Image (cartoon, one colour):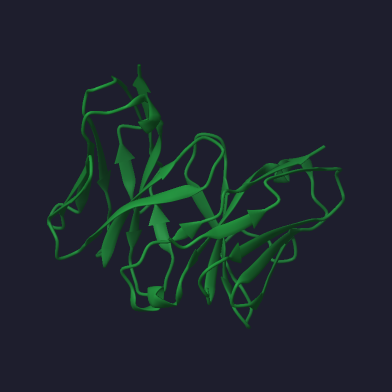
Length: 119
Length: 111
């Protein structure tokens, strides 16, 4: 089945530093990837839609300059949390649809998430 | 606002019992999907039901969809301790667009 690899799985950083999270589709091409944030015991909150070769589409309330998204190839999207602060500590998850998903009725394939802790 | 809303929010049952989770949504959909999430992990796709389907089975899973009531249910039969996880419904509202996830049901299956 389709596999999405997300790296790193855990990261601890100091306040003010930047952290990059990678999301790769291993055996399929993904023109669209999605980035979510999840708080404990809550659902996924969509942050942005990452589009290969174009700018990401951010959800309302998500700071574009804070959460930089780059989708430079059909298999890789990155989320960079810039100047991280303790309130950015959370679980970040990416997902992707393969090319056939463009015609609908296909599932999302998820990475295993990244636990970010900002001290 | 949340498109999909599951109930109950939490469910605790004994091994061997059946678990039923419900999902309601608000707008028209192309399909509805159920996902499972183990603690601290990503989501795993369980089953997809199209808007023109009413019931679907996959192993111990049974999903129903009632588009007139804008609701779906997920039944897990003969539950096992390994079924302990959070379960989310997600509605696909448009081709190529994002899914909208409900708040999830946390299922605990006690041995």
